[in-house]
Length: 487
Image 1 (cartoon, helix red, strand yellow):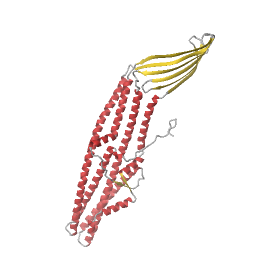
Image 2 (cartoon, rainbow, N blue to C red):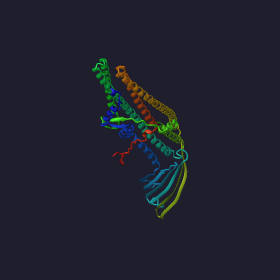
Image 3 (cartoon, rainbow, N blue to C red):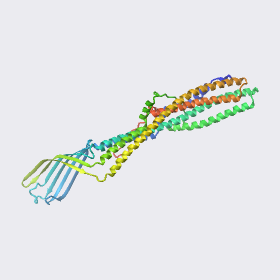
Image 4 (tube, rainbow, N blue to C red):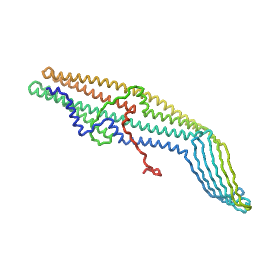
């Protein structure tokens, strides 16, 4: 009977040592790393960020040089009504400036060949050239180049938004991994607990049968302990089915073979700082939802500035400076004239219907107001989630202490009942009941430990600390041909 009083740790340890021969023990962080390395959808989120990065290049290209050229021939009547064959060549190069102005360089050459008998006093053939530089300065619409500055700000906000969406996908996936992993760990804990119960029940069954052979116990005692054992074995089979389903789910997330063995390993992590304000600031800094709001606010601000500029009237100051030459042959000799030319002018245009611009501006302002309201809700939810997690963590720690005391008490109660059972002062019903109460206390302790681990991981996820030791996916853009088709 002394065997009943021995600790059961050796049996449990032997069980798990046998399991680890073919099963890999994995922590939540190790599982999450394999998921991040494998999960196909994560590539889409990373590529979306890289796609958004190209928007800045598109906006910056607005300041690039633009090259133009033209050439043509014609047969027409000149100013004096003479038939004239003309050859025209021209070229220009221009660019928009960050300040909003536009700078251009132009060069043109024209050669006219007319009937010399009809206009002997004019150069024929005549060649004229012109070279000039022009500068256009917007005084109203387009001043300070909002299409460029706000386009660049919008592109950067779009990149931040795509990055926030990427991190949100990571957090959602991590939440799924935490839930599946902890569910699997809880199932393993239940199996471990039922194994300990079966071990104790089998020991008690052997003792009762020995006593029965000596006529010291009754048939009901044997039947009762056998029914208890069969019930425990049936419960274990049900748990094993659940474990197979959860194991397959974990392997699928990690990209492993569906039947690859693993053992969830739970370790409790401690927060390095329990100050609420510190944790709240950390959570705000990490929150993908808040980062999305910040990007939406930047996009709305840029849209407002662009819409306000678009509804202004066009008023441009245009200046040019250059040189023109005319050369050719006349009946009286060669002609070669050159003159410096220049000028300045104002150009004005006004749209008479600005309702479309007003509607666009109003929409942008509404987008900003909506984003601000969403920000208030997210901050409130974040503060509530953090407060709830901290309260639950503290309560779970207290519960663990209480369950530890309960296990010690139940163990002492069972040991004392077993001693009384040996001398016939306790019945089989008492032993089964006390063993069941000890099993429940041990299971409650393990389940509470699992819940504490869940909340600690959720807290680390909320703070962004869960990713501290996780290598995040990195993807490169596919190489493109000049046609734009992927290789």
